[in-house]
Amino acid sequence: MMKIAIASEGKKVSGHFGHCEGFTMYNIEGDKVVNSEFVPNPGHKPGFLPMFLKEKDVDIIISGGMGGSAQQLFRNNNIEVIVGAEGDCDNIIVSYLKGEIKSTGSICIEHSHEGSCGE
Image (cartoon, rainbow, N blue to C red; front, side, top):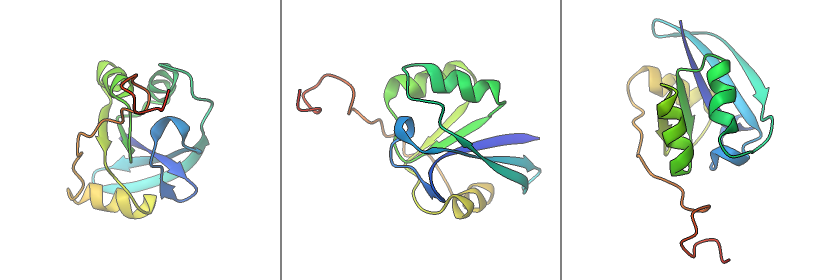
């Protein structure tokens, strides 16, 4: 059994992982979705969400965008990161299981102090 979480805004993939409404969790057996559930985002604190999802036995996180430190924390917890996804969560999971979704590897620099925050 594998568990995939998609950072979600309603039924759509969230553009920014940390500020998503919650996570649509899919339990996968073989190449089929066994069931899914929505878990609300418990709050955006640095370093918290990777541990929260690890405790929920998540193997893969899919998001539109995600900062570099969050991506590293997921990798440190043996959770595969796929970024650059967009669209309907249920469609994304089907595409992923068909091998059609690949991570773009893009990193959000919104929170790094490189002048991109306007601060």
